[in-house]
Image 1 (cartoon, rainbow, N blue to C red):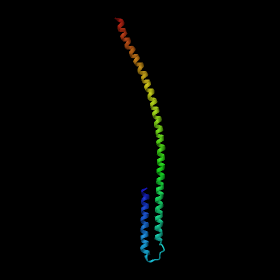
Image 2 (cartoon, helix red, strand yellow):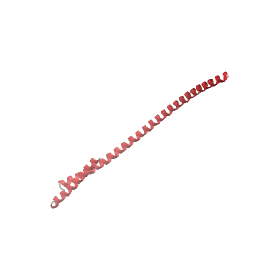
Image 3 (cartoon, rainbow, N blue to C red):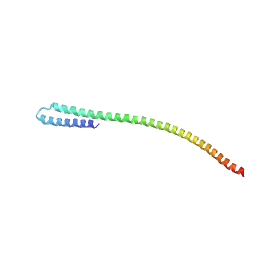
Image 4 (cartoon, rainbow, N blue to C red):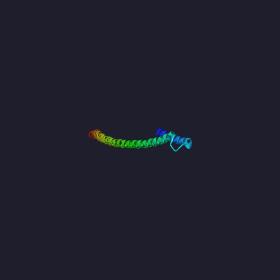
Length: 124
């Protein structure tokens, strides 16, 4: 993009210089435009066309980037939602297994404590 701007400015300077040079040389000649003047006008037109094309390309590139970003964001949101659901589901299952195993161990421990204390009371 910077190169395009430099080229446009360079062409504009050349066009202005050639226009100025043709005026100083052609002061004593009839009103017919010189070749340098015509070339300067063509360069000016080309510079404007390059500027317009650059602006148009920039707008198109921005629009494509914006659309691509929206699509990517939507896909990311969907993927994140699916990952969250899977994590939530896995966490729930793990928690349920942990609670079940903890309850099982608690019951075994409670039974052993009960057995240990019960045998003490029966011996007395």
